[in-house]
Image (tube, rainbow, N blue to C red; front, side, top):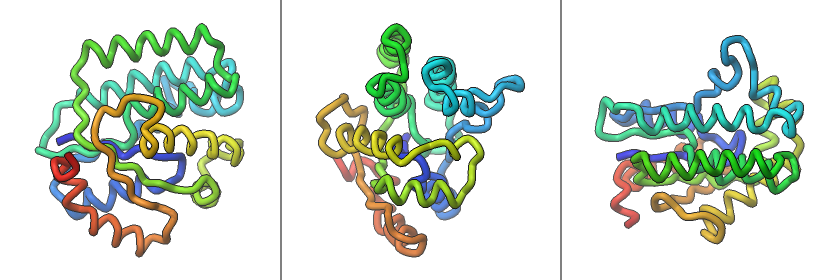
Length: 212
C-alpha cells in the first residue's frame, strides 16, 4: 500500500507523516528537500526561488528524478507514505511555473516529455492521495513560523496559485487525471485538532480500499 500526502507549502505534511510514523508500523519517505538544497554543493531550490525563469527547469528536472527514486524504492513494510509525489511535482509546481510565465514553453515541453515517458513506462504505484486542504493564508503563517531560508522570498500570491491548482486537481478533479482515490482532510486547525482528525481518519489512510 503506497499513500502520498499532497498539499501546499507549509500545510502540515511533516506533522502528518510524523504522527503516522509514531503510531503505526509504516515506512515514511519524506520529501528529499536536503537533496534539492545541496546537489554536490549547489542549491537549486534557492536558485529557483531567486530566479525561476532561469532555474525552474534545473530544479524541476532534479525534483522529477528524486521523486521517481522515491516511488521506485524497495519497501520494508506493507504500507509506505510519501511526502508529495512525482504527480504533484508535475501537475502543481511545473504547471504553476508555466502558467505564470516563469517557465519557457520549450522547458515545459521537455519536462512533460520526461514525465509522460516515466509514467507510461515505469510502474509508480499510488493507492491513495491524502490532501491536507489548507488556506494559502494559513500556509503563509506556518511558513513564516518555520523560517526556512529559501522560503523567505515566497509571496502569498504564489501560495494562492498553488492552492488553486491543488483544488482543481484533487477536489474539483477538473484538470489532470488522478492516479488514485483522494482523501481530503481540512488542515487549517491547530495541532490538537489536527491530531484528532488524523486519528479519526486512520483507517482510511492506512486502508485505501475503504475509499474505492
